[in-house]
Figure 1: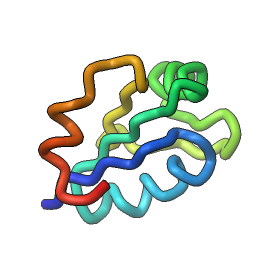
Figure 2: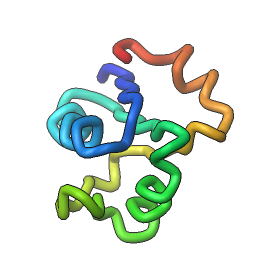
Figure 3: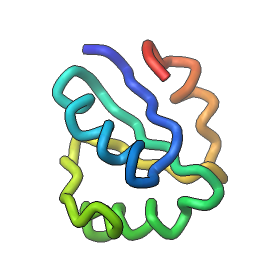
Amino acid sequence: MANIVILGAGVMGSALSVPAAIAGDVTLIGSPLDDDVVQSIQQTRRHPGLQVELPDTIALACASEDNDRVIKDADVI
């Protein structure tokens, strides 16, 4: 399976993460503006803007975290 990293946890990035999770391992990395969204998804698995539940297979990270390894190991960004 491909390692897929999506930068930005807004509506577009989150929407792209759902079908991408079928094709590979997905990490959704929020921008510094997305910290509240990422925390909300981590707690409820639901995107507050999309009102869609994100699969448990999608990993979440805030921009403030050390994401170098995730990005380095990505097949697709």
